Length: 622
Image 1 (cartoon, one colour):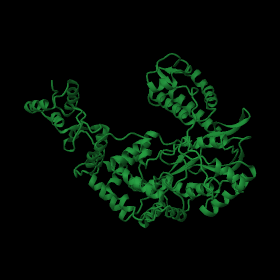
Image 2: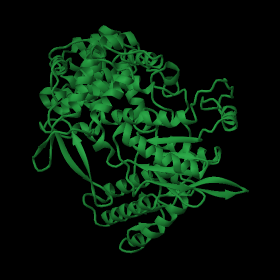
Image 3: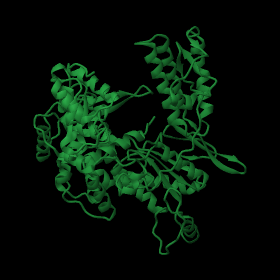
Image 4: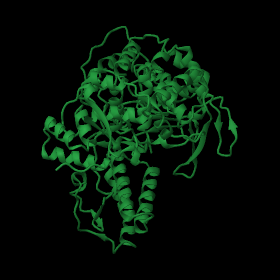
């Protein structure tokens, strides 16, 4: 099952770009790419200190940053390093880039098979993140609207919404399902580098670095070293973007067969709510005066479908795509998994959903459910977790929390299926035996929900159960939600697009930029990065007095002092006014009285101050 990136994560990435003054640069790259400009000097942007700091921030926020590569190092190793040293190392690596060995691990799949994952070293992940941040706005301007995977502000929801529209509005009831055989393992390196060049990315130094990344030696689980001649390692930060570049050519080839086919006559159309322009008049003209085959592509990563109106056309398109993939991209399709489906008769599986067209009020509409595979996997996972609740591996409360998170994850992902309530009710019946079996004495019908989110989502369910007064969420209580198209104006690389995603930072940008560029040679990378975050999180105010801080008034305080075991983590730091900081550490009564008179703190503010004073070992102020 593919899980889309949470919207909170996307917003954080936007915030990070603003923290480090890179947003304007990214906006300009996007605009120039839209205008068809060529980029020949991207390395100066990629190796800029601000871009490297931003890469560190984005890597640090990723759970995978604590996974070791072949060198055994994680983000913690870099976070303790002085920032100036860290920046210099990254810049030097770009000068003569040679990737370290990639660690290969096999991740077990639900069907018993394994999926190979390549884990670069933390330094190589930083290098890839630096490149990704600069390439993404350029590529975003070139990608097709119905490319939904591994892109900012796009998700599985958008892909499912597009599928429904093909059935409900465009009346396309024939689907060409194509499965590319081992896509990530068979990407042709030479072809990929040419495609990058064709997108206008013509910085030769950068192309050489990406080429070196693609051929990075792989250390197999048995210790053998393999040098790949094709493929992009799943697990590499740059791999999702590179996979989209590979298949971008396919998107536009299909689109130009019908949807974006250029006509001599300019057809007008109304603007839809999502910002797209209605093409109905153009399509009527094409149907009347051309022999073009009507087709639409919907893609999520390497998983894509072609929707058609006629069986014979779909049959020809199936053969054409098979040949095109082989001749243009050197990729084969899986004959067993690729097929042509009549949606009026059979379901088509896509991203864990199975979709079909059924008659309702004399017309065909889209209906969807979980795929059989997703249904079985969900049932088994929940059953196994109920066993863990009955016989806890750690604490029963932790096992129930994990079970609840699994239920909420299933509901959040599959709520876009029109008949999801049928599937969830069936799963509930299958796992109910476990609740009625060995857990009879534990499970109670009466209890109380305290969490406002859970009350809102599950408060009305009659299937709520409680174990030791802890709520156990019902898998059966799911509410269908119509999937939405992505609003066209939403874009992380335009001012208007960002306004639809999040609010402004609400801090003095000039002070933020000074703070970000300040160099303290005895401070760690983590300290300098977290200081910027705290300034924004506190809206530029002192955490005690609430005073809006000028640049020379900003002090960053360790809550638990370093000599007592404190560190440079975000939770152990706080932004204070310089006078408040003096009060935290002051022990002389004259000094304390002087600064109390100056600051005029209220009782609640003194209470906060005393908590910090106790941590550093000072007496509280009465």
